[in-house]
Every structure is written in C-alpha cells, then in structure tokens.
Amino acid sequence: MEMDGNPITKPSKKGTILSAVFYALAAVLLITAFVSLAACHQNISRQLEQGVPVQGNELAIVNLYLTSCVQYFAFAVAMVFCGKAVRRVLAIHSEAPVQVAPYMLNPPAEATGPDYAEEVEPEEDDTDFEAWGFREKEE
Image (tube, rainbow, N blue to C red; front, side, top):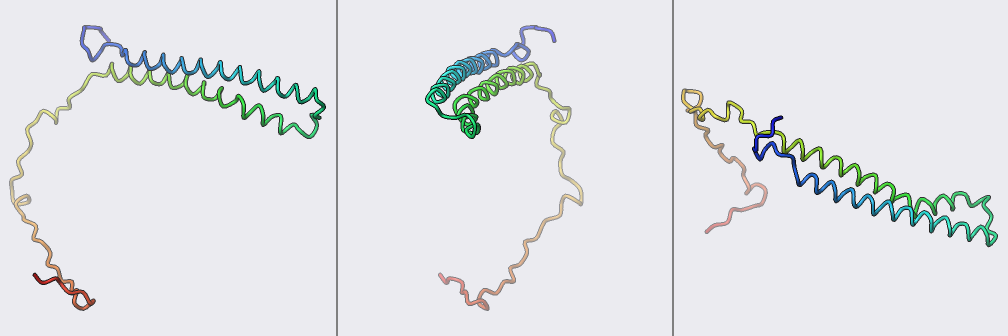
C-alpha cells in the first residue's frame, strides 16, 4: 500500500502506544513473578530446614508455587498477546480504506405499484374482558 499522505493509510500511532503499554505491563508482571517465585522458594526452603517432610506435602508445595507466582506468568503472557493483537487489529483497521458499496450510491427506490399500495387494516379486538371479571374503566 502506498503512503500518499492519506490519514486512512497511515500506520496507527494509537496501536503502537497501546501495545507498548501492554508490553510494559507484561514486564512488570514478569518482574513480580520472579520476585514472588524467589520468595516462595525461600519460604519452602526454610520450612524444609525446620523439619517439615517433603513426603506427603507435595501437593501443598505445588499449591504454594501455583498460588504465589504462576498467575503472574500467565497474566504476563496474556499482556504480550494483547499487545500483539492490539497492534495488528489497529494496523489493519487504519490500513483498510472506507469502501462505499455501489448500492449505497443509488437513490432509494420508490414504492409504487399495486403490491406496495396495500394498506394493512388493524385487527379488531374480540377479547371480552368482562367474561374474565375485568371491566373497562369508564371515564
């Protein structure tokens, strides 16, 4: 696509900025994940030094790792994905010119002829509310 100064074909600055924000959030989440991982490992090491047996506590150890740091890694991956997706979506959106379909240029067709001239008659209300115990309000 040729860059001719048309604002529709210019690359999206908004996409670049948003993707940079997502990447920065991913970096913060990764730093938090590694700090949390180190703290969790240190905590488990101290408990093992105090005599807590590993056998029988495997699930508790895995649970400590999962609850302390894995979600940060998952969110960091999600932020990287969002950063790439935003950049692609906004780049595609900014590169796509607005296309006018031919039918949008034609004037509206006039409704003429016997098929279009029919009037719809309203249906009569045959409901008898008095038979149900309801009475119409008299004014």
